[in-house]
Length: 440
Image (cartoon, rainbow, N blue to C red; front, side, top):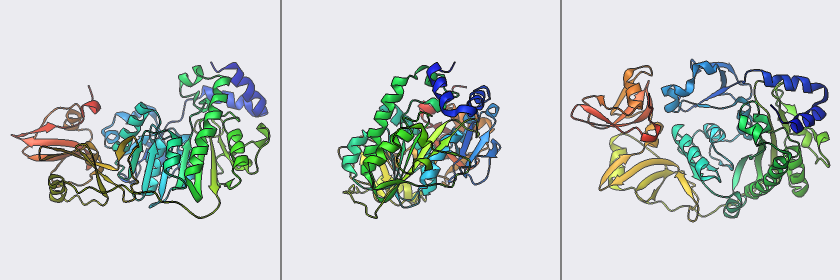
């Protein structure tokens, strides 16, 4: 049951379109799968029609349950609501840029940005809530992203550390979630007009922090998954009135509706060029996006993180296995990461991931990280099984496997890195992370 106040407002705003809008809630949801171009270059058996606004996006039949397939564990794709694929594509991130995803959990848009950057440049992804930040970090790992810095900070603190630093920023702002009513019952039960007002105020604050971090000449995409004008055109208009050096970029997106300046008081110039996604007009849920640019052409630098020489055991493991990596070695306790070349100074920041996690040093031994297995597509001491093999099912349950291989072994599924095992005495001891193991 949709909230009465929400229905009354949408009837007033949509007019003749309201009946079609309401009827869309009786239809089955469209679900999306976005392929990881680093690991797969052609559609998989799960893939149906293409998502028009994302080159790697497809619809799929939910009865196929691709989330249970070993390819999901290997990071070949991300299950993502189709409309949610629009904001990252609109940001148009490029290789070698500095890109910030400010409200990044659970990681769908972040991993989409990473694919566009092709592993080049610096991708900073932040989530203020610790539990959600850990989920974000896990998805970054699963998708084999090596150039991401995962932070758990307040946006205002980041604004102090990174003034006019980023080339592109995505702000997928926390919102009242009206566009997710068809997807999540909790969004319906949590909704109120007071929540809408609270979200609009918070979104304005987050947008201010983001603006402080955008270089002159840079691009910022603000998005929500709600229909509320207060949280969409209202937030953008208020921001543009405060920041005359920003403007809305018109986008060639014929599959989306335009923003509605007539739905708010005192609309700013260009708000009609924002974008709305309605479930009765496309195969996806409700969304809003505004593409903003800042006039000028300057950006600031910040102090860089100091590189630390890799221990001999780490360097030996990488060299013996032909793993050639470029980056800045950094260490947290006994855990080693290879970070992007432009890694900023991390002192005073809550860091969950600093680039590609290589592994841990333990009393002169090196234990490779699960992230390195998911990043690796080639490894000399590997053992490969097909996705439907009993060996892969057993491995994902945490069981040992028979093999004459010795030392560290990369277990692959149809050639894609899945996890580590350690060979000795005719078996492979399973090193698949306990928290990821299946119980069936």
